[in-house]
Length: 330
Ligand code: SAM
Ligand code: SF4
Image (cartoon, rainbow, N blue to C red; front, top):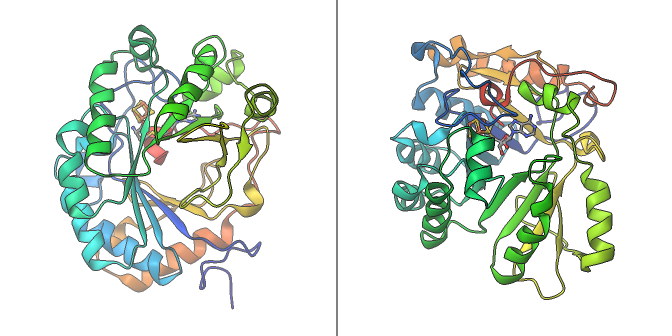
């Protein structure tokens, strides 16, 4: 079978997961993701409609993908997002349907999203200190994002996950506080490494990268973290638990311990570009095929993207990704 038809790329990696960006706009300006003045966004008429996204997901599922994560930019800036969730639930054989959000608008949408069939949510939250949260996001209000976390828990969107990007000299002294949260609550906190993508390249250059493999080894030693097997929809994270912890602690280490060999992910940007690898700016556009409802052409696009997927990222060799995460669908 040629690469792509069965969700395999040229290196035999089977693809199971698609990240679908529904917008490149955002209501925050995280320092590592967007410049203070924002980025030039795509014209609105270039953003995919929900029916177009559905077709892309149906084709992806026909190739063996069964996990979908809705992301952005900030996905909840599309106020009718629950409609998309319902559509994907009803019309595509998706096994795991998740959302990544900054949480700011989550309190008003969590219930509707859960009712429409969303399985779970990841909230990106880099600090539990209001002043720091505001500094990292440039104007975010921690209380608002935290209300979103609580609303997701109340709506049963579990396991509830918080993603924290660890930055040297910014929030790396909060790690113990996050561990403490997992001791007391049934939630996963996942520490993520800074990647040289968009604004993240400058911050890497400025020395804000933290090696989380080293951090993990230290915490295994000092805090008694022990590995947890098999976590549903775990992707590249490795999970651990405190001896008396209710929740789990995840480590995502694309730089210090890459997982390219087992990468099973693709991305669809909000303007209909397929990106098989986050590290390279190459992409295959399926927007016109989606607009025309041409399923076969969309499938060809997926197959081409899989065929051209490189063996691994080029960040350790000093490469950077020009487009920022808000445009790629992080
Ligand atoms: N706005 C939503 C959010 O923040 O969760 C979804 C999109 S955002 C681009 C998805 C994730 O990408 C966030 O968890 C964010 O921390 C992460 N991210 C953005 N730029 C990054 C970078 N340069 N390196 C590592 N992670 C990054
Ligand atoms: Fe927006 Fe998410 Fe990027 Fe922060 S990380 S600026 S919330 S897209």
